[in-house]
Length: 168
Image (cartoon, rainbow, N blue to C red; front, side, top):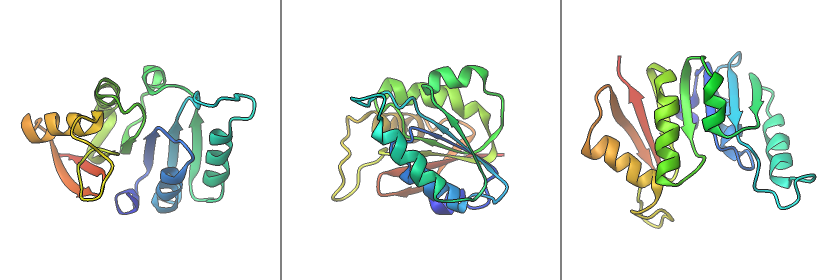
């Protein structure tokens, strides 16, 4: 993830959780870039405390590189007003097949030629936790191994990550 974030100007992460991936992206993106972090932080049992959200903010704030824009919303709502071209998109939100497909269909159109989309939990690997019936695994297999959708190609696969690049 860090390698693919290097020198990226506009980075979007769908599904922030505690912010570990966001920190890796922020540390490696272009110094003047913008990191958009999209997560509704809706899973807290005690919304007024929301420890996941607090942990994410603390972790991301530990790195001063670039600018961070927090979008506390579901990705399918956030995309409604989105118009900014994207250099790197990390899809790590709703892991159902329907949710991952919707994120792909909603957001991939904003990825510029030469830009990448990273799918988390999207491949099977030795000692891994993913399974063939997981949403991200099924979607990546469908789009990039079976259909091989035009204009996109798999450029990297490591652990649970699959990186696809927009040609052009």
